[in-house]
Length: 264
Image 1 (cartoon, rainbow, N blue to C red):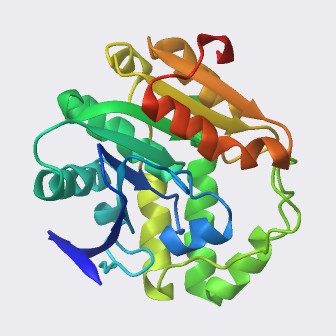
Image 2: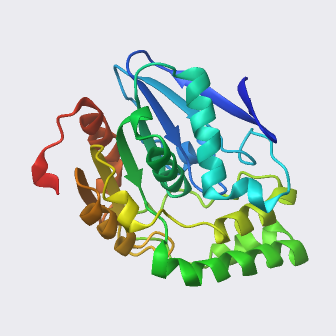
């Protein structure tokens, strides 16, 4: 297993392909393996690029500590920039993330925009005003895990309606996180937010935003706000599973620089 050490954790990673570098990030409580099960490996089948995927600290096969501050989004951006400095020195890197991965990319890109060539922001999470209620959801969930275990939280989560763009045949999966770390991850998410919109207006990177309808944890309001403030962005909204299946092809087009402006 290939690894990279950062303060307080060892990140597990893999590489595939050759060409310009792309880094791919997953969402909260997910991992490289879980994203494949959920059909959210957005660089699947990508040719002509060197794709670096890694499990965020505390997720999948990466290690972590039960400390809330370790899972704040700016801290995850530290990990990303440290990893890129070690594994992708030289030319700028394309960043592909979803949910928490989208947040990590935005924090990292604002801090070091020259490190990135373009971005794919999939399923942007609650942010700004919509983050207020989500913070309480995460804090209550952390307390539930501490009282009754991760199984009780997983079962409760399964009661939430699935977005219509999610294929109903995709299996429901448990978090790919050690149970002892789940409360810290959730509290880290509760203490995090996307960068202020006024800061994002200066982020002049070609950006593809992928969203879907009917998901309270990844509302269209965030995706639409990002599409307005990011000066070189395209927003694509999926309403059906077939449209989500087409996301890797859109990502490939965007990374090649030939995604049409008609998609905005």
